[in-house]
Length: 373
Image (cartoon, rainbow, N blue to C red; front, side, top):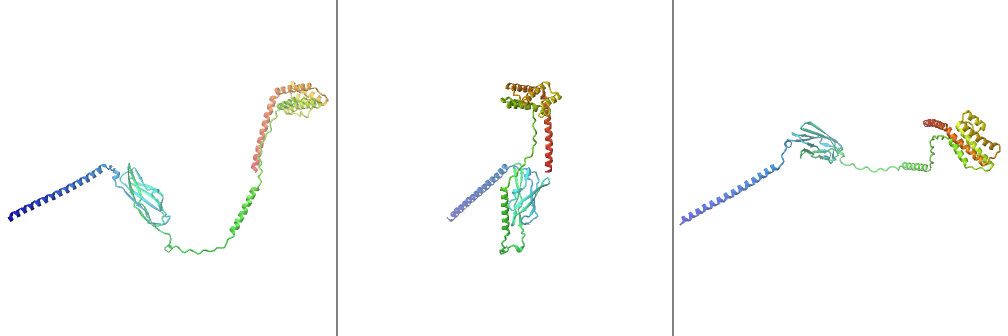
């Protein structure tokens, strides 16, 4: 009876071992499947990233290195120093942007920069910098942009620490004690100087407000003598006599005297003879010598004879006789305008030439005065 029980136990143990092995195999298979799935997912993501990523150009794949150089390690306030950047590349770029003034901020400022191109694939730029740091500082990493189409690659220089070099001696690190306040004697000269300046200013203001305006002399101006037209003067004299209506003996005498004087002035201005101081006979004789028109000469004789009779013979004419004498004067004027107009025009031209000569002489005299003044 014990043998069947043992056999049954042995079979059960074999079944348990078989089931346990199968379970372990199943767990291992599941782990392998999960690992394979994760690996396939990772490979899929990597392939998808490579497929979606933009293709790299030959220039981008090319090796590019950047180097910086400076010979200083410590600076004082206000010191200038040199700083250089070199770029070695194996390809071409559309544009290379080196650091400019905006890249240097803080205690270090850029004073100038010069760019060089030693070779086709090497660029170099030299900076002249100035430090205003009052303690240890760092020249920061500076960007260099490499542009190729729509792609931009930025490389950075290494930051460079720069120490601060003080100009004080080692024993002068601490502040020296303050000196005692020294009492100076009161100086009176600033007050005296201020008083004198105030007096001078008051005197200048007094002279300014009480001064007399200088009399400005107007520069002399040449004033030419206007031409007197003998015909116009004769016409005005005869026209003025038309408004005269003499009644008494004295009025008739004045009328004839003014009428004779009008004709005398005409001949004196036109022919340059002393007609105002000459008798009627002397005037007629001089006019005959100048070959005056006979009709004009007869009209002159008639007017002057009547004027002499009234003036010297104590003759009192009538109003009609006075009007008749005035009509003779009009006849004389009409004949004179007809005969003497060319002569009057020539006199006017001569007068203008004479005035122009006087103007030139006046201007020369003024120029001499200005030269001596």
